[in-house]
Length: 180
Image 1: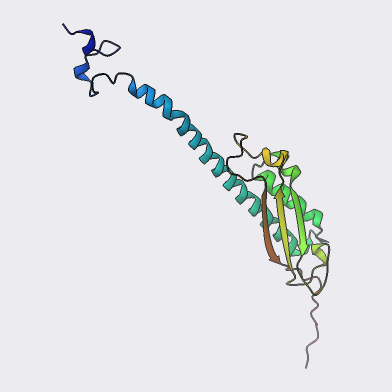
Image 2: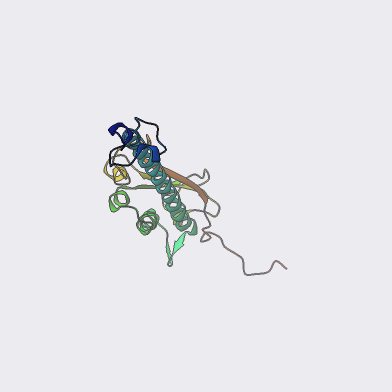
């Protein structure tokens, strides 16, 4: 008959397990101590991964807005900043961004040319440089992007900007007469 010291809880003989005598339950204690750190690290990695994905979506939305602005004309009418903002918001919505972030997004179109000044992309000359910036500001819009609510990344807002050249050819005139 085995004595009480030779058996672990549950009645299994101590000789059958590969644990050292007196280590019964040590694995459970070690797991209980380590598990909160492991779970916290997993959540932090998940949060950082989600912020990286949201940053990519915001960058792609800025590119989509720049593509719309570069054309100069949309459905036969000149492109306005409002058209660009709508295109960016539609992209963000289609990409699955929360409505709080989409509605709170600040979208700006800036003329970078030095030769002429325009306020709407439809007035740009061919190859005029411009930028489109999309910002998800701090507060409710940014907080709606976070998974666990704690700021593990140290980031308080998302901002992405792209520079583009106008492909607007409405100002371009081509002579129909031959020079000779």
